Amino acid sequence: MPHSDRMTDYVETNRRNWDERAAIHARDITGTYLLDRFRAGEDALHAIEAAELGDISGKRVLHLQCHIGRDTLCLARRGPAVTGLDFSSAALNAARRLSEETGLKADFVEGTVYQAQLLTPGPFDLVFTTWGTICWLPDLKSWANVVASVLAPGGELYFADGHPGFSVLEECDGRLVPTYDFQTPADRPLQFADETTYTGDPTVLSHQSTHEWIHSLSAVLGALIDAGLMITMFHEHEVLPWQGLGCLLPTADGLWRLPDGMPRIPLSYSVRAKKVRANKEASESQVLHR
Ligand SMILES: C[S@@+](CC[C@H](N)C(=O)[O-])C[C@H]1O[C@@H](n2cnc3c(N)ncnc32)[C@H](O)[C@@H]1O
Image 1 (cartoon, rainbow, N blue to C red):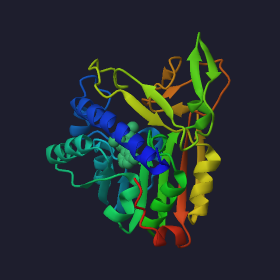
Image 2: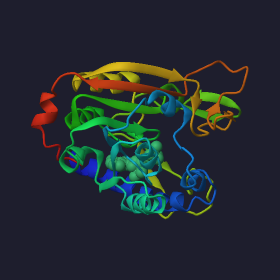
Image 3: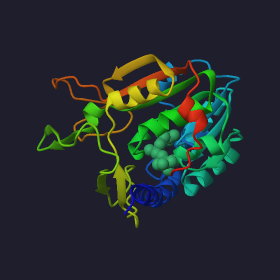
Image 4: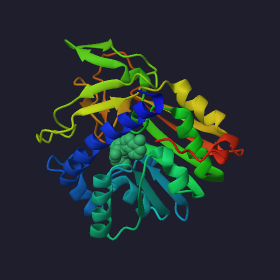
């Protein structure tokens, strides 16, 4: 199969999986997404991004891979004009419902990240994308070019996600074992098949297969620099918003940490990057691939 057909196939497989998961997450019977508390007015951003985001009121914000829109609407509460983009129609249906229920306004656009330049050309002052996003993308050069292409001059990316030093690990007989390469080749994704989604909802998925990629720090930061962005903040964190390993313990502010006595490793990281020069590749390309 040609490379581009294989990539489309990966995206379609992942989309089928996400359409099913999104409907389950929107029901939130396990309370993982804290949707009732969000509807009641509580902020659902995690402590990391809430502390690092700064004042975004009056800005134009693009939330990439916005899922069921909860975080998009948390951003909207802070006063900017927000657009959320995701490739899952089920996720966007849930996002629009949540918007109606809460009266919080956001535009929701269906498309892949690589189509963002065409579908939501901006310009935006902030691109926000966090927690479980780039692991679904084979090609970070295109991702960074998309981000650069939709940002206004001086605009910023805020990005936070699992650290590759954590993503390579599996837990085996109580020990953390490096199991995966720290950089997954675009054409050889990791393949998983999980019966249920990660929230603990027992609904068995019909579309269990996913294709995922671990991206090294140099792949992320290098792609952003090459796309014309200047890294203005890089933090590594000993906590993670989800229980990514069985041994992790909950923190008082709803995150997860390694038990005391284990060597400290970064579980997540966050980046701010500012558009300081025009990105030739991004402005010339129509970013047509999926
Ligand atoms: C773990 S969720 C991100 C959750 C995010 N932290 C939030 O709630 O705002 C991953 C999202 O990425 C979306 N996604 C995966 N691959 C994508 C792609 N290639 N283009 C656009 N969206 C994609 C999925 O539909 C899903 O909603």
